[in-house]
Structures are given as C-alpha cells and as structure tokens.
Length: 193
Image (cartoon, rainbow, N blue to C red; front, top):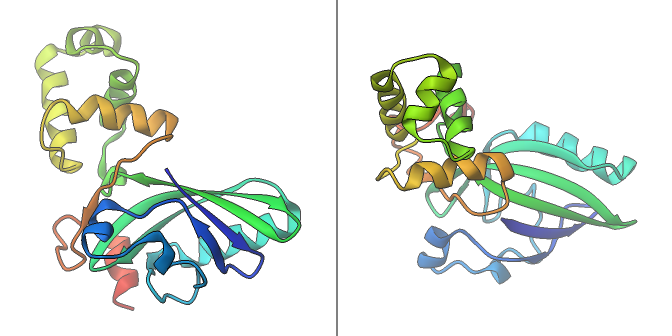
C-alpha cells in the first residue's frame, strides 16, 4: 500500500514509496512532494479523474472516508489503483493507495467466485465441491484468471486473491499504455480523448 498525505488543495506533502517500476526509472517519492494530484506533473490519470476529484472534494468537506478507483500513468507504465481518502486534520488528507490487477474487471462472475474461494485458502477440489462444478472446470477458471490477470505462475494466484480481499499490500500490476491487448477499453478510450 502506498500512502500519500496532501493538503486540501491536493498538493502532495509526503509519499511513502513509489511503484518498483518507477523506482527503476529513477523516480523517488520526493519527486512527487510539492506537486498536485491533479496537475499531472508526474502522474497522468488516464481513467477516473472525475471520480478522484469528487472523492477528494467530498472527503475534504465531509471528513468521511471516501473510496474511488483510478488508472494512472507514470514513467510510461499504467496501473490500476483503489484509493481510500481520509481527512486526518482540517487541512490534511491521507490517501491509501492499493494497486489492483489491471484486468480485474474482465473476470467473469464465476471467476470472481473462484478467486474468493482461493482467497479463503480452498484448493481446487474444495472449490469444485463448494460451487458444485467439476474439478476440470475449476482448473479452467484458474487458468483463465491467471491469463487475464497476467500472472506468471500458480503461486501468484493465492497472493493476488488474498490481496483483493484485504487490500493491505502491494500487487503492482503495470502495463505499457500502448499495449492495448492488456489495457482495459475504458482506460485506453479516456487516454486518447
């Protein structure tokens, strides 16, 4: 999880870390300090900009926790992020930012069910029994999930599944924004408007 502290205008006062890909590109948290979330100096919000502005303004005014999802491009990589905003002082907002699998919304409802059961620690046999489907159907869903979410191996699947439930750690899925084969249509459409 990355954490930002901003003032009420959206100026970043502190950032806990940066995405590993960005660090490899020479970008560090200090590069973001003093910039504004909405001025696109280092980060271009390719999807969810209006939702972020609404969430930010709502949190600043009401003091309630507000959540939104964005796609953001930094240093030629795009990531999908779930943001939770909390007003911690009259003039300070904390933003907890968890990366999400980029193609998460491309999973079917059954694949999401399988992911939920994987996050509960069930193996394929137990999932098949719980859902009333065959073991081969579970294995096909697991394979399709790995392909859609671009997971390299079977060990990543339970890690990602658990992350989707508790969202307390890193996932860090990024894509090259020109690689439309792995980018969701809404992000690409907004990026080119």
